[in-house]
Length: 403
Ligand code: SF4
Image (cartoon, rainbow, N blue to C red; front, side, top):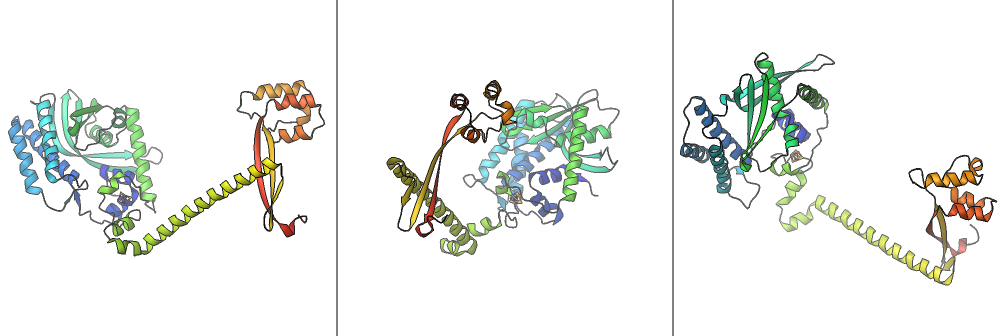
């Protein structure tokens, strides 16, 4: 079995169908989103910065800006996809610059910890404690620092607009898996690992640590995810806001038709078979709703008429409407706080044995049919909430009397 990467696991958790396109069918994702492009350039400059910091040669802020602009301009191409059409490339370039400038100003002279490596591959072996099966995992961490004797820091740079809560980073799996790999690589040296996220667009640093129990749980969950991937035969699409950035929309069953019809001229769009079927179904549903409303209103008017004139049957052309208005009492059920008092009353009246068990659903009928004293019945009925029910039945005139 090839080693799983965190990106691969994350893709499956985000959308199994996207995972299938990418890792099972191996359909190349040709499109690069501007967000991905921005993140790649910022990561490259951060690597370059910390490689120099590691060699005790701290670049100036101007050098950092030049490095980023140079990488941006050299790599920019018109195929980079911008989903949010209100923004141009310059908008994203400025975000990258702001991220780096703020980061530089905050951390200069970068002496809080010493950098051991940048963009370092980490390998982890996850062991299923029940079967002994071993799963290999690999990932590329952004930066590894040492902050003291046996104290390591795993740093991760983020350029997205999304800022997670502390609870979310405390539950993050990616850096936890890197920690598992790091502890396996240096079993005697690693005493403590700080997981550090830099949400650069927000100028926020977020930290978290993992207990051995949490790492064990993450190992278990990761193995479960790998097993889910390997037994999956459907790879169902999971739609989310990330679909807008997904290059597989033209192939995805959840998006294909939307994608194909989006650009059609109005006439062709309306003539397209699927569009026509959806429109016809929507129209039929709306009509049904309208008819239901009309039926309800007509019934209400008829019942009001019958009530007003004290009628139980109203004649139409060749139909008779039979109207039955009845009032039932709803008695306290097992969750109702008044239930105990009702049971107490039934016992006090000596009716408990007769009822065998208290079924509040049919108590009303029992009270009506029983040959009990009317005062007792009234006492019981005080617990019931009166509820009117109205039934209208249509009978053909010729069938009347033969029912
Ligand atoms: S478009 Fe959305 S649902 Fe379809 S594969 Fe991509 S992420 Fe999954």
